Image 1 (cartoon, rainbow, N blue to C red):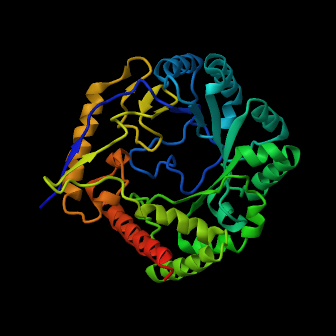
Image 2 (image 1 turned 60 degrees about the vertical axis):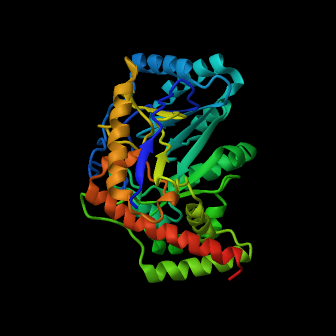
Image 3 (image 1 turned 30 degrees about the vertical axis):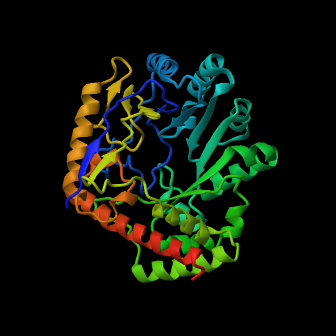
Length: 379
């Protein structure tokens, strides 16, 4: 029997706990895999646009009026390169700290090039968490993460981080998180050869490793070779059993999470009730022009409102219906749909692109289930 998909469509959006602010679209890098390069369908291109003061004031008021009444509020600053607008960030931090007191925390995503001692002093003063992109080792980092004029950035970024660590060792441990983007298992293997050096950069948070998003426009998919991936995971299993912490076990741990069921399908009527981020919104993304999205992964056409008029229930219904229809077409016969964590942000893809993504996603879920079984049974 084909599965049918239903959404809850509650559309609650006045108790949000996570706000992401696109403080600028300007960037001093031109990374090869950047979703804002102009090579990804539906995503904006690099621009000199930054959030104007009037939009900043509206953003502050929107957060005050839509924030959860009791939970901790997380406000994240996003770009572009967010540190290019540090004064505006400080203004928002001061305004929201005065209003929410200790109930609000802040973090910023940065490429790390501007983390001078002066800027670090200010970030520490305002207790802002810092996520820095460093792609594992110099060879891979400099291949993908370059300045506008094409220069590698690894040495500069690492030097800034080490100076930060030396100047504020405790704060570095608590506030720094590294973000690593990989193209393939081969990249991870090469990065792991330098893991001892990379480990010196880690704070108390494990790195967040993600894979380069497929570029359907250029037909660049970055999918792993099956033989190499199997050899990698077998080695990772052995390392994990021996208590090793490196890129092998980091990737394995990330994979194993895909073996967790996200929901269950009713055996009675074969219906799946999809809980989407529109049901009871815990996060919202505010772009530099004041448009609202569920998160930063959405393309420019799937906004849900703006700071002027607020969240639009009409748009929420529209995207919910389209998403429900898409899942019913693409997923009704899927045997592993209960493990699936694909989301509304997939609306930016065509059906052909979605099917291509599903092939890789299904393979990863099957691998996750198999290696979870191996670990549990000490196979």
